[in-house]
Amino acid sequence: MTIYVQNGRLYCDFDMYAGKSRHWIVVRHNRIAAPLPLGWDANSNGNGLEVVDEKWRPMFQMYSVHPNEVVINGVFRTEDHFFLQGTSA
Image (cartoon, rainbow, N blue to C red; front, side, top):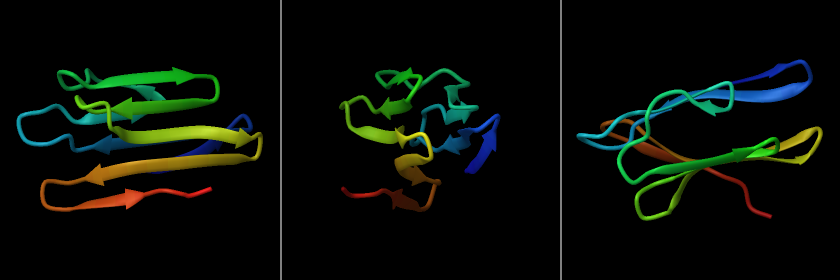
C-alpha cells in the first residue's frame, strides 16, 4: 500500500488479493483500476471509497473525516496471510 498527498489531497494505491480464482483488487489514485471479481462492488464519491465482497462485507474503506483526517479500514490478504487495518470511534 502506498499513501501519498498530491495537491493537498490524500491518495491510496494498493493491490488486494481477493482469493483463489479471483481477480486482484487494484486501486490507483483512489479509483478502481481493474475489473472487480464477480459479485464484488465499489462505491465512491469525493470523500471516500468502499469495496465490498460478494456478501456485501466491506473489504476496504477510506473516507475523509475532516480536511486533514482520513480513516482507512481494510482486510488485506496475500495468498498465505492476511491482516486487518482499522480504526474505531
